[in-house]
Amino acid sequence: MQITCTINGRTHRFDCAPESRVLDLVREAGMTSVKAGCGEGECGACSLFVNGRLVNACLLLAPQIQDAEVVTLEGLQEETAAIRESFAEHGAVQCGFCTPGFVLRAYDYLSHGGERSEEAIKAALDGNLCRCTGYRKIVEAIVKVKS
Amino acid sequence: MNYRRAANLDEATALLAQYPEAQLLCGSTDAALQLRHAPQTTVLIDIHTLEELRGISVEGDYMRIGALVTLNELLRSDVVRASLPLLAACTETFGSHQIRNLATVGGNIANASPAADLTAALVALEATVTLTSQDGERSVPLETLFCGYRCTKLDHELITAVTVPLQTGSWYYRKAGTRERLNIAKVSIALTHGHGGFRISGASLGPNPVRFRTLEALLDGGVYDDAAIKAALESDTDPSGGFRSTQAYRLRVAFNMIKEALSQPEER
Image (cartoon, rainbow over all chains, first blue to last red; front, side, top):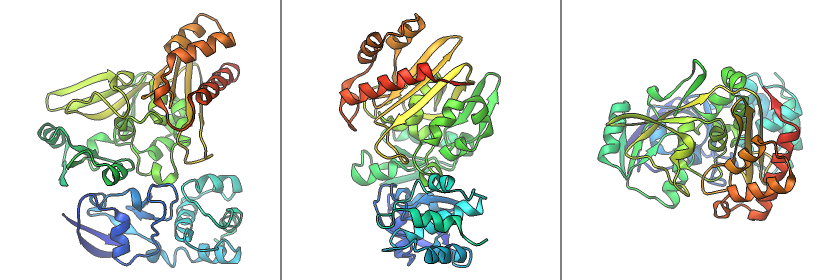
């Protein structure tokens, strides 16, 4: 089937099977910030926005992005600059594999007026796993993002 | 894979009549994995854009929840928080933010998982589901929709809405699992206690959400004895229903939750 959508503002056309994962399509389109992690919706490394909602690209099938506006971290460089700086300043990065997902979740959370308390941020990060940092520094980085 | 997108509800029911073996696609959180690992069908009917199946509204003493309402829409709904606090509490424990942005009420029901959180909560709330086919609409109590592991009695029908009586009296909801968040239930218990007596259900304690009728009758009769509660729980549950720990463990946790529910219920 033919799928047409925009990714980071540019029109993309895919000739794919309906059961293709959006994760694979966006990576093939060059958006490699979208990581193939657990493949089951547990780790959040493949998080991206579809029509403004943050979702797991591994749980999304091609027809779900027909005519949709898809945005990945590549398309939000300016908007996430302060968050990325805070991650770097607080050492909230080790191997970096989970980082794009965490940055997008932090952006989603803060841009919706999310509370800057540790407890609320921990709850907001329920869909993202990190196997290196122990989360402390990630939570700290998000608390201290300069607005 | 033969893919068909339904433009409206009439088209969806016509497609279902034409392809009874089809898999419906709405939130896709479960369908995406099933199609990848063990496809049961070669036909996919996409209903995720059907506006008719959205929206939450209060009609008299009932709340109507469209089948395509997402878990995050439920979670953010003031009317759900105010009128169905048990459902709001359950929604808070459901999946992750990213999953709640996709997962739908109708999808959670139709998927018929033994561990489905929402379904167990809705059974305790005595929800009914509206099923629509080419022949029209029918409503059945949610509890009667299931027929075993991942099995429903849907007959060329799709779930279009869930109707839930507004909650009165006290309630309790608790889930146990291996992760604090993004949990799949090893056991969950939903309980309401109002004018009609106790309504208790649980997930992961049988092939489908279980309504604990023996236990309800016991408690309605004023018997709160530990041994009697344990015996009732055992007779109400089906050990073949869960895979995330032993039945002995799940029964013990369920018992502890029931005790907690009786001593510290939430008041509406």
